[in-house]
Image 1 (tube, rainbow, N blue to C red):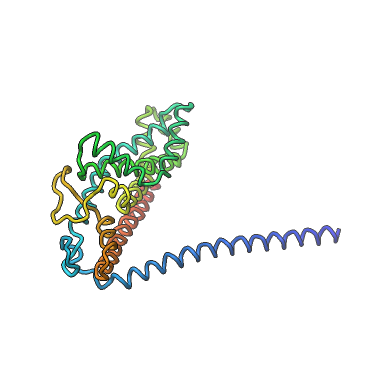
Image 2: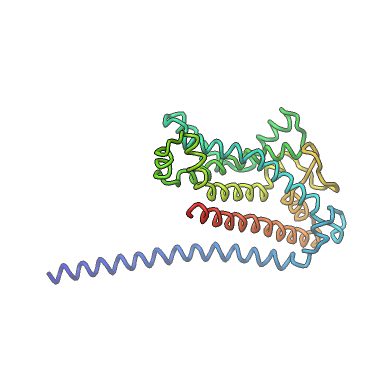
Amino acid sequence: MSTNLKLNQNNLSRRKFIGILFISFCLLGVLVAMMGLISLLIQVILQGYEWVTPNLIFNYPSRHPEQAGLWSALIGTLYMMGLTALITVPVGIGAAIYLEEYAPKNWITSFIEINTSNLAGVPSIVYGLLGLSIFVYFLKLERSILAGSLTMSLLILPVLILASREAIKAVPTAHREAAFALGGDKWQVVKMAVLPTAFPGILTGVILALSRAIGEAAPMVAITALVYITFVPVTPMDRFTVMPIQIFNWVSRPQDEFRGLAAGGIIILLLLLLSMNSIAVILRNKFQKRSEE
């Protein structure tokens, strides 16, 4: 009896040691990743904080670093994000609702689901080349902000579909059954029971997908968005540039002043991304509390 007790104690001690060792390795991995990220952030902030001035935001690009700014790139980024949202949000949410609520469970649906997941992991440069072939050359949209928005829509659409499907899938089955018990048809159940509950998760997915679109440079380089624009785009067919491309242009310059400008631009882009993510968290919590009441 005492031998079995000692064996059990030894096994328990060994399991505790293995658990502590596993947690230590996980924490070490997190610390290494965080240290790398923090060191990069510190380097960017130290190099660029002096350049974060009103001139950097409201001036147009210039060959003189003391006069250069991000205004046309900032407006181009916001313009492209707005068009991308108008295109992607209805299509992405509609596709998620169909796949989760209406699509029959057969091999065609499984094929679509698998390929949607695969498309979410395709490198962004591939979408840029696809946009260049279809929107710029085939549809003759030129190198316009509309072509850029359509290209970005292809990039973030799989991400939005997956996020929206997960939010819809998380809605308890009891909500659907209660709505059916009250006499609602399929669309009424989706509209009145499923979407209000899934809305916080869908909204988070929308903002996170748009955040990815803001930070992508490779697709815009592929469709050759301009790097030197001294005007603000007005119509969807105007030429444009975006903040990542403008930052890339400054980084490629040999002068140290332009590298400081690039670091300042990175700070502004990070603040924009953090603001969007913060808004996503606040809105998600707000609507989640409302749906639980």
